[in-house]
Image (cartoon, rainbow, N blue to C red; front, side, top):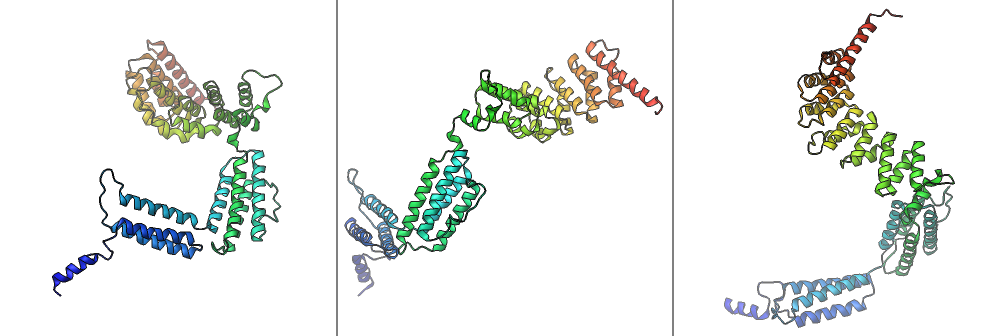
Length: 440
């Protein structure tokens, strides 16, 4: 036979140029899928299901390489129909597999994570404990273990201990080495127990299930109120907690009471309290340019030193003078020399109303590096209030050089500047008198 005859024979056999037959048709592929479907219905073990999966993979491969007719616009696409059937059979195959011991341990670990990651009410903690106890009792009955026994915890509703008990249940299931064929009923019973556990956790009372006033009541927020209450009672309680210095209760109210009215009162209380215990909350708000939070940070003084880097970012916010003013004041009250250069640069900014705040902030910080720029402002600035602020700042720095720079303007025609200069001169004289006084 010639080479040409060989090629013709190969083409008629449908195997030329490929390891897979090229003459697969929708009918032959459907017939093969019928066989797979019948085998799937008869399969009872994991090994038999593995064989069904291998046969289904072969059909899918043949379908991928098949040269199927292209349908007309109104005809059904045979490839699409066959691919859909393969996909459905894969879903049926996966549904028939198992159950596996891993399904049980996954469900237990999920429940353990829910317990540890949820804030429960006091009632809820005991309901969680009941659900875990019922579950471990079932596990012990099915596996013949003692996961739920022998516990003598000080607090039976301790959620950390309950999560640890579930970890023990996971270990017990893994140690049982359950086979999906030989131990199918055992695995199914354990999965039923995990369903009960999940249902119990869903029904247990979480903190978020409570209304806001119930949460506040549970935290004791209203405990400080007497028999007679002002309206709203939340404001009366807030004032009492402020008088007691309880930052935690003010922050609780701020978290829960979202009305603009109560939010404003909470922030005002935190500003007045100036307690560094509120730093984290105020710093987070300051990073969103909240002016009251920045004011609160300033009132904390050196206790808010970690916020200086954030606040320096707002020094050049010339488009928001209100933000600059509160920021300059806060930086001055915190008193970190880290802000000196940034503030000194603003002594030459255009806004006449903001420049005095930069000068005063430098005075509060007290960094001697600010003496020269403040003295320059006092000498050459065109605005009286800015020059007076610079003189005031020099007095606050209080070194001999700073006081001399301010005292040079005692004959100034501007009363504001002259007053600060005279105070600086008096401070210099008092310093000289102290230096000349004999030691006691």
